[in-house]
Image (tube, rainbow, N blue to C red; front, side):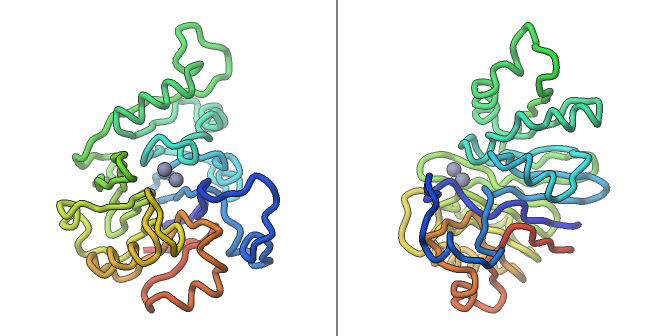
Length: 253
Ligand SMILES: [Zn+2]
Ligand SMILES: [Zn+2]
């Protein structure tokens, strides 16, 4: 299984004009973050988790030419706004793209991309099949996917476990009932927005406390705001088995 961080940033705290802060003006490529998205290559399948506004750029950057499925964690714009660009995959693969999300999230997709679901279809529009999922494990081909329930303030969101990897983003609480599903992980990926408290996202300390409960072999932080600080400074504050993720980072399990 090959894992690639396509993006590790967030719309939260993204300035609309050039930001003069230490992170936004840094020349370190690890401080340049597109919106969070994650690529899992397993058993000949290419699965992308979340398709935010940077989706097209991320697919080109990672040379993804064949997309098996997209999993959506929740309906916020930074996680689904790029879905229109699946049309290139529809064209090349000559089939609709399979999308897996909770029914509430599917409903948002139907509203945001209403032209995709119109009865009279415009030629060339994206084609997608929305597969409703809940907290029950499901299969994509031979790949077993276990949804992990979290809360994003009051909004229920889903993380996903595939094999010995779990990807959780936009959580700010993890119910105890989910801990069992996160046992025996090689890699836990978990969101950490910044060091100061936030109403709907884990802070660095909150993410570290989940990591110390779950006890994966390694953990990577993602969905990082520029308020977190520079990669080279933050990395020094983390335990030996925990790392800040950055765009383009790949891991092989
Ligand atoms: Zn969100
Ligand atoms: Zn987000």
